[in-house]
Length: 560
Image (cartoon, rainbow, N blue to C red):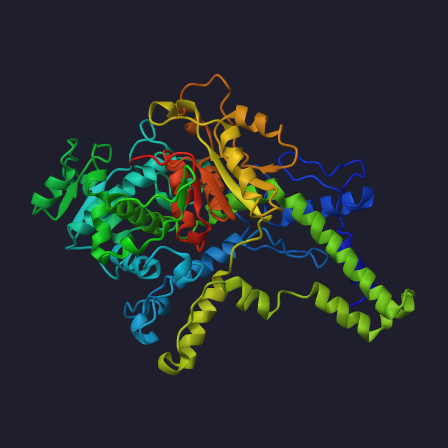
């Protein structure tokens, strides 16, 4: 590699004024290295923004991320279109309907299946997570036609009565009900009221969960439900609160329930028993009032089941959802990432200069310079893709499974990639206020930060907070903590005098909200109020993404 190319890798060609400062809204500050350093970082930040299609008015990712030679890949971003294609391929069955390699433990000498959307060892996730994820995928996304299947059709709960997190949990309850009675859950096509957006229209997923995440049911079942609704043969959706009894008593092949009926939670946890008492082996990792309370069987069953069903529902983001998460990451800490990468690259070139001498002749002609610069700017090596990128992959015995099959299974994990870069160490803090006071006792932002401060006894270098909140007052109050760096999504917040959360929620991007929860679930530490569906969602996601043993500090516990 020539010196010209090496230097171009550092000084990305882009229009950036020297007057631009490193302080961007919602971005960690810090010295980048004078005006030249600021310009390099801003140039790299904007080059990534262009290559990954991150302008505010762009809802879908580019078909291919093409980076100039002078621009290194962004460690905090994903090539969403390419990655979505790889993830879809990982769920493809064989020509005769065979399950994907990761779902076939019989070929693996008794080891657990290896769903590629999971990370961490078995001990780092709730008990039996890998088995349950495979089972849910096989149950809802079975091979072949849906004709003759027993269906439970349920419209999505309305956003007029339920927040985003609550809608997910209600669907979790009905998935439990369907499985208990040997039915396939079919969310009624076109009924998800958060999915009537420009991006959903552009991807032909209006009114569908598929706008944001991978499908959760065999598409042929959706076709049957849609056709029955269109020709008037879909049974009337019951609106009473006896859903469990109705489904249990009905011999009809298709039953429809209204998703807003009460008392779903009475049967929600029963699905956990389909896997014996695996839930009972869950470790006590939620702290409340300074203790690790041993919860009763009902709570354990509910948390275990919700965590499993939520992980299945949110296992892979759609290309649109992946792109929305890219936007949130880039807005929150893209400049931080660019500044550090620019500093690293500059340092590497200075090291090369020291090794081979400072003259242009030595730099441009030295074999040693070319070797060192080649290492510095080369594409990711094997340790990045096959070790760090598949953290938690258990693998299988090659002698038993066969070298070719074992390699194919490992290659699947390599292809789907690992988690993008997040500034660390970082704590997820969720502050729920507004109208939630009718359901739980509200807590101040200061009380949440009390526990964040306490974490520093264990992690003295902890300074980043991923902040989830709907309140502008909380964002304003965060500025009174100068020794913390607060990051948060691009959604606007409710004014201080707001009373209702529903109108606010419908005014926000649900994709940005889900992106915020995804990023929160990938933090190192967790503080929140488990009386809130959103905190529970974050807690459930982190319990099945390799962070179970990171624990959760609860401001309150909630009882449902």
